[in-house]
Image (tube, rainbow, N blue to C red; front, side, top):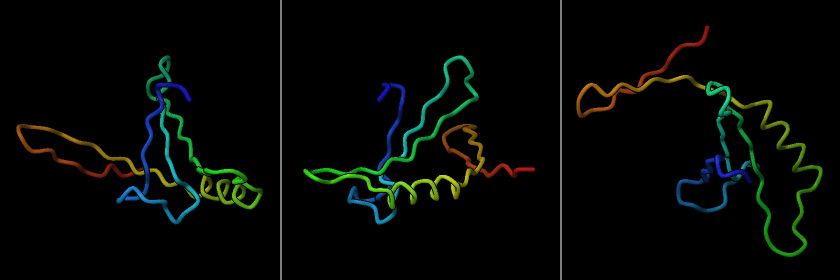
Length: 88
């Protein structure tokens, strides 16, 4: 995986998440900085563990259900103000 990717576990406590997506990786395009690529990752470990067709289909469904929310953050002094930006 390229060093530009940032990874985040979805489980708050660091345990295996119940959904199909275990990790989310995001990278920026250096030539087009407003262009992002998001990767949904299913993690398997140990001998014999493979991502079967059923899990691949669940990942495809998760990709179709992906929701993106726009937000802004302003730091006027010592407090961060985060607000939603409505889509048109």
